Image (cartoon, rainbow, N blue to C red; front, side, top):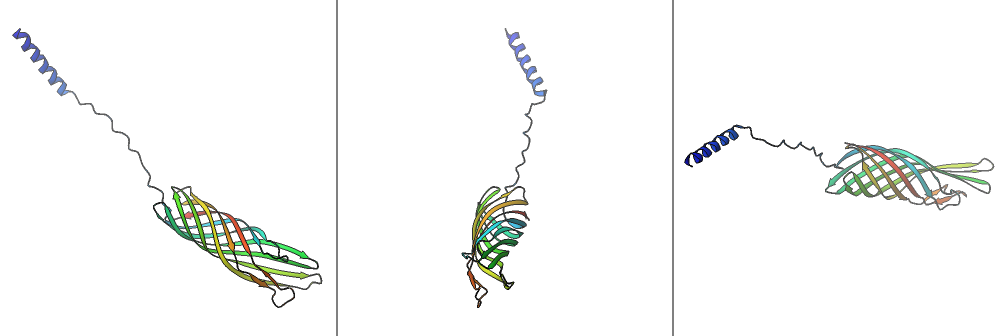
Length: 217
């Protein structure tokens, strides 16, 4: 019996020694997962924009000009959490025009320039930015009239007012963003051909529906 106990103890010790000499098994480390930094709207940007506009002159002589426009944009944003504040300015060449004929007189109105300088405020949902905007707006106009006998006249005016609107912008990459927006421009009333029998006062309200593509630095 004693011999059996001694033999069992020696066998156990030998097994432990052999196990101690075997290499320890370790699980392979999990592969590292790269997490890109969150997107930020902070930065300066430049871009192009274009779209369609229509105006209401409240004038039987000039009617309601409409047409397309295209131009450039510059702006800057600063993001704080989900909130984004910014400023944006743009200039567009435009061709919002209409010709109205009343009896023997033909009247033409053309809005040929559009300028806005606005503040923006929005909420960012990662790469999507929902914003409202407001500020200054001005348009360049040309009004003309022609009488059947060939007599006529033309006047260029710069008409100022405000701009309010809203839109959404999406960042396709860290640098390229695209937006769609609607702007309403309530403008001051302007008198054309003053001191003549063809004098016409025309308040103008302009609506702009446009898209833009920007490059952010």
